[in-house]
Amino acid sequence: MSDEAHKQPAQPLDQATPHAEAVTPPETPAPTMPDPAAGTAEASGTAGAVPEESALAAQVEDLQGRNLRLQAELENVRKRMARTLEEELRYACLPLMGDLLPVIDNLQRAVEAAAQHEHAPALLEGVQLVISQLHTVLERHHCTQIEAQDAAFDPYVHEAVAQLPSPDHEPGQVSHVTQPGYQLHDRVIRPAHVIVAAPREAAAESAEPPCAAEEES
Image (cartoon, helix red, strand yellow):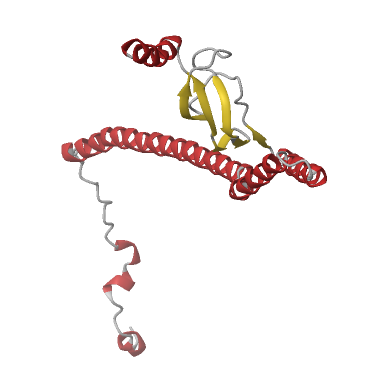
């Protein structure tokens, strides 16, 4: 050999024999055993979802029931407010009507007083005209006079001031009206003051004392 061959460095072993690399076999995974705890947890999670859904359904049903009750309550409140407003409007002029009644009473007394004088026919006619106009105005606003004369006594619209015998009336019948009553729609402003016919027995008893007094004399 020449000297140049001896001068070349020796190549490393891995470069000299490139096909001699070691091959690492693939790792085989170890067989896994099923975890009983994991299976139990999954089963319990599935079982726990059913009660949770039932609870949610119950809450939804409860909320729906509350909603329906609230709607019904609001509807009742609306109806009550509508009735209250209607009633207030219906009887709004009741205080005014109550203040006008004494004026009508005084005019009626003036008519009765003037009727006793022969020299006041014009005044009597004028006052009667005013009373008629007032009654027309009251009726226009649904304020009417209560029917009382010869009617059966009604404690809701009549107020008895006396009970006297009357041959022309049945017992319990109104024989005389001392002061007329008025009502606004169906609400009484002032009851009619009336005298009620007494029962026949009471009339007979009231007639007995004078007879007894005559016999004693």
